[in-house]
Length: 166
Length: 119
Length: 173
Image (cartoon, rainbow over all chains, first blue to last red; front, side):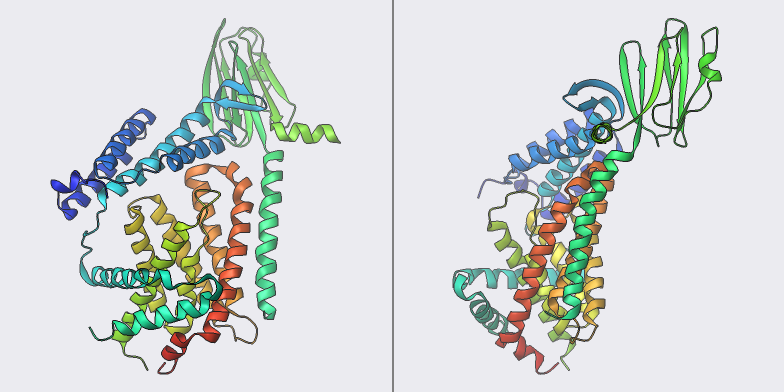
């Protein structure tokens, strides 16, 4: 587990609140430069938070979003790549959508920390969901490829009733 | 597998196939507007809504795209042929403003042109 | 009749199973990074049989919130898309599940549920992210979705036939 530098200064609740404020600011201004700079900033935050950064996924995501937007030309033709006209409007709109999508994922990654308490009844249920998730996950090695049904059934049987006592 | 399981699968498969063909044909039949002025080009889908001003040797020329059609709403040229040309909305139609060197034409999307050559 | 506390327990247990299956799915190598198999839909199929509808909806809420908390995407488009897809899919699956079992099994339920969820997610992502041109890849996503939902449905049918755990729950219901 990498170091979470942000966790040293902020409680999970405060962290979530600040993250949501940043996200609001991020969405307020629809400018490519602004969103790109903010996305860079969110990336730094996510690294500081010790989050695993899926570089390849984010780059591919921005690439595909931009590519598909370029297929619907809009505005001044900047240059042509074979049969595809690269238009300024489509390029900006694609990059804007791509960075926005990536920025939202990154700030979300940073804001949400295990130990974030979701209030009320739902929060309690989520806690239970994670409790069962961990119980089942501990038994993962018992799943056998040749008898998925039988082994999964045994795991469910044990984990469901074993926690009956508490 | 029950009767409606087959029906569900058939529905899923046919929607998948349909989505493939509609995507292919969609890219073919939509028209786009090509504007040329001052050595540059602009492309817009025909269903856009926009007003754009172009600068040429004679002054300003304003082009309006709306309701699936294009027209010159104003031009600083002397002859005003472009403004009088009225509205165009079909593939292959064009309007030009010679004095101000602005040219507008409606064309199919590139895939559409290729399809046309096959027939 | 099962007490409502037991129903809540079963709902959160199925939620935990959803997260477990998402985790398993995450471990598989994926040819396309955004491709999803939807293994986490399996517990929802169980829930149709074991729980009343409001609990099925609660399970969906727990599933997507849990997934969002684990992947950290709780506060992004991804969450909204998966929420819209999962809830509509659950409504469709529940409606179809009410058709007498003589005519349809969990295979059809699973396929139709996945189809609905995928179409909703496609429409949203085309509208807000990728633009109209992305319909080209829609067919690829629908293909993957159809195949995997068919297999998941098949697994659900076989599992429910053999499972002691399922029959231990069915008794009192």
